[in-house]
Image 1 (cartoon, rainbow, N blue to C red):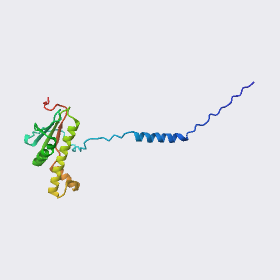
Image 2 (spheres, rainbow, N blue to C red):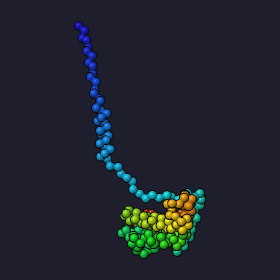
Image 3 (spheres, rainbow, N blue to C red):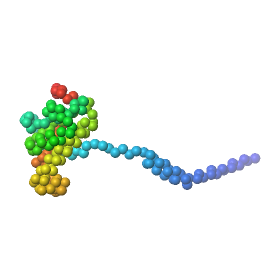
Image 4 (tube, rainbow, N blue to C red):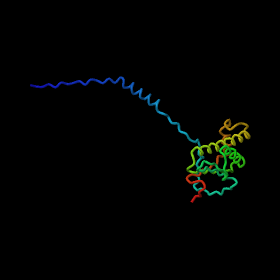
Amino acid sequence: MIIKKRRHRVPGLNTTSTADISFMLLIFFLVTTSMDVDKGLLRQLPPARNESKQQITEIDRHTLMTIKITSADEIRINDRPVKASELQQKVEAFVSRLGDKHLISLDTDPSASYQAYINVQNGLAAAYRNVRNRLASRQFGKPLEACTSQQREAIRDVCPMRIMENYGQKVGESKP
């Protein structure tokens, strides 16, 4: 007696709703997932110089403004306490007086808050923007935003953003 094996056919799966379910899951995750927006400071670095040697330059104390942010988020200009609201006016006056011969040194204590650092950076950016707008109005008769790219470059050459930042040491400590 020969036993014949029956071939069983496997029934097909109904996959018509699989695309609908995956699309609904995709929409669900897109709606419920939060999209984080990166926050930061927009800064353009100066062009790289092709100098192989760095020169040590003596800096005249009259052309240097030292801004310090302490661990208590106190802002000090040349070791004098300053309110955050006064920072912009003091920087504007300093940059206007010295033109391209100024240098601003920003020393931030590592334990200072990020918000204090952002506030100082915003004050510096606003001061430079106001000084450059005044220069553009004086030289070209229009605000900086209305100037051509060559005119903006000429203003940046007259009033460059010269900020030196010191990292990694407590404010008031001397370097080894």
